[in-house]
Length: 269
Image (spheres, rainbow, N blue to C red):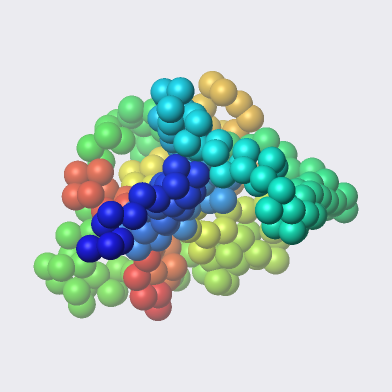
């Protein structure tokens, strides 16, 4: 009861609010959606949240005074000299550490501005047919529940196609570290990365594999890819089987906007 009567200082409430938003973002992405939120994206979200929260807390003159009261007291109150000296030492050191870490020279090659997932066209013509990518589904995906034994056989067939054609670049472990990978610019995609196929629909992979690098759109370039036009070497069925294998091996689920699935990780094989 006494805790309910205690008034939490405005500055502490602001800090608790920011911590609450940060925790909410991590819970939503890491726990509920099963996705790892990139640090840069979380930083951007928190910047806008912090700006909004600060405007709310300083919307009135009274709110501004309450928020700045502890800071003003720390600077002006003679009895807080020891605490003031500690803060004036810790804050510059903390800021210096952050700036030092950010400004440290890197000996790695500069990262090229490359778009990993270009926007797909609404339809594509491959294998002599026109496919609507907005509604296209993997014809074998239903067998995962309807006939698990046949589904496993198709995954195994996809694995054979992958080893015979794809592992030279994308690697035995689908990590983009195949024996030819270092000779390509850019290097092949790492399918194990949560930011690749786990974020995509199977129709997107079908389009990218079938049309390869030459099939990438010219808008908002650069779209860089060394991948061949696999429709010239594989059948439509083999490409769908390879896609089954990619998701099965990495333990990801294909993204489906209809069912709400979003690349949740599962158990790999």
